[in-house]
Length: 125
Image 1 (cartoon, rainbow, N blue to C red):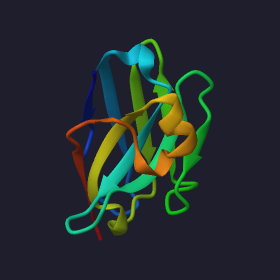
Image 2: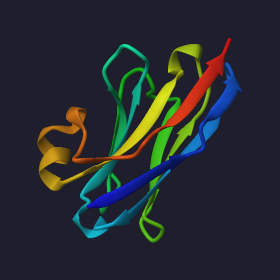
Image 3: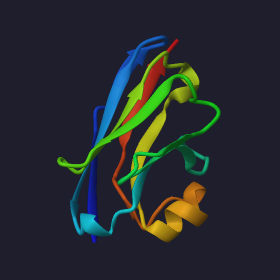
Image 4: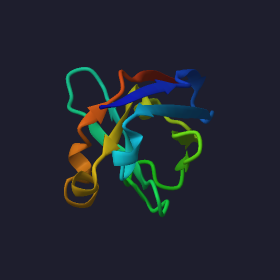
């Protein structure tokens, strides 16, 4: 079991920045990578970004490329999402997920087995 806790969400004006954190605990040795997803009411979860835990390789959704940066601190078992130049359409609940090697390699857009409870990001126009 991997326990994930997101933090850092809030209300920001368009053009502003936020930094989300995802702290992992439990069986973190089984984690091959971690990712960020977001969801608005009435829609499914949308892939945002992911990062490989050992090599730090990253991948982003086209909608956030150039504005969002995912990073990790292996010693702290924490993943971050730096969000710059935020837009109203970035408004969503943001969730982190922990990937196994198989999920990270073959099913990254579906997320992993473990998920946090989410943190709300609201961008006003």
